[in-house]
Image 1 (cartoon, one colour):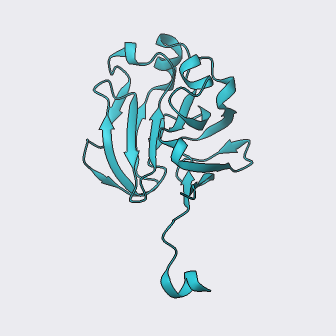
Image 2 (cartoon, rainbow, N blue to C red):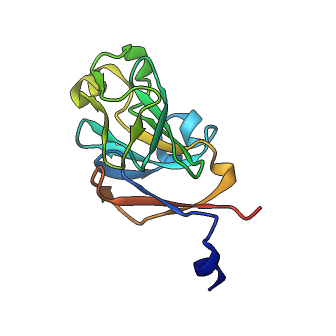
Length: 164
């Protein structure tokens, strides 16, 4: 009741899937940086389509020069890294096309990067795309029980601020 009167200061954030494909637990990602959660908590997706979209309304805080990864932040302070494929930094941008730049404001479902899945399969170790909450220590995460997801449509993860 009081929250309705005064507004709830802590906002839950629901992420939509940034790529279409099969959901994979982070522990199953064949790269210890992600599987051991060195960069934060999250999930991964084995993509079936070469397009990454914004998982929420926010701002592009980092677009790697090689276009294989995008960092986003929303008004509530949630920071998300969408890392397309594994060992893709070595492709030096080949097969990736950015549709945003650092500082751009984006809406959930807006295209961030398109990529050539076949080229990634050929030149990198995996197409698996980790979706990491890089400041996950500040939030509690709830994962939706989805075997497969559609970019920009399927609710993927809910993030709640931890009580301070």
